[in-house]
Length: 253
Image (cartoon, rainbow, N blue to C red):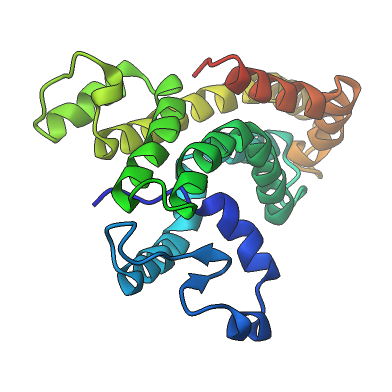
């Protein structure tokens, strides 16, 4: 069964605005502002509602793995560890910043899905299965831009499928895990590069404190202010976030 992604632009606003009284006043063929038309879509209304609720359950996992959120949150966690600031910024701050940056990066894809799949489906111009096909194309095109061919080949072999002549013909069950693997690889590479300058500071501080016999304080506690000072003077957040965003906007995986 192909995953249903084309509802999520409306789902986010529908979940925030929907209340119990509002739901009670909705027509019988709508849910969270989505209109279900029997017959015209090829799928009966109860089944459409079940599929919508299933998409709601899968939505957090899809946002975390099939969007730039994956790379962003991995890099931010590596950066926090490299700085040695323990829980500052907190997980909520890092996740929130990653989510808002993801929304910015995914806005063009969401607009394509909304205009090309959701609006025609809502107007009854296309069937439910055709709406799913139109939904998968922009998302799959986005994922393929940042997916390594090596990872695609790995999952093609695991699925025992021949390599298609065109990348757009790849099944989504191959593209999705390949994208996750590629993003993890890229995130860890960026994290390793971020660690290097702070690792040098840790080594210098440890060498100096041991040479002068200053063992009362752990070297990590002494080096932390210097690492934070270096990061602030270099305008680190601007550099890190800017580099990550340019990597996605430039199509570099």
